[in-house]
Image (cartoon, rainbow, N blue to C red; front, side, top):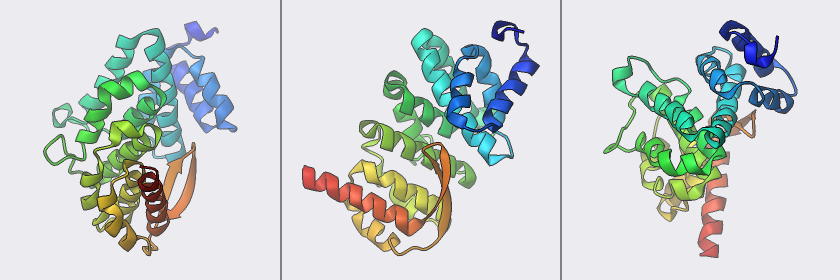
Length: 235
């Protein structure tokens, strides 16, 4: 059966096999050679997977697929971005698992979509914006903001002031993700809090570079301090 004739169920099974198979960079290329529009919905479904590896690889794959789709059909890619946004809206009746992460991954891959939607992603950490109160969802938003900040700093240059509250959270994952996101912001006002966090030994797992790694909050805070100090020295 050719890729153009794959039914929805067969396509979903095929994509799942790719998400579960090593080496993933090769499998990711295979996913990107599947019909782009038809691949979006199966990948969306895997954002809710209880298998963390499948979920995060779906995030990565959506980034590649939607960015490629934008090259071929920009409006179709915008429809996907609006779908992420709708799923994060209270009126959708859903939770939006994986949506901020996927939005960020798309924008990390695609400058045009970053210019159009970066401010919306950032608004999810702004009390005066579209602030998300669900703590577990906040983790996804902070990862997304951090991913965007590291990939395209100019689209997240105003996030620094909004990260402080998360750095003071009782949740070490929120503290660590906020510290990680802070580095590219170049916001020197965060230095005192990051210095306090530098000795925080609480652990967390962070997905970056398409793999999981264990970190401490303190380690991520020290990384951020190094980036901020380097930016300050170069300014």
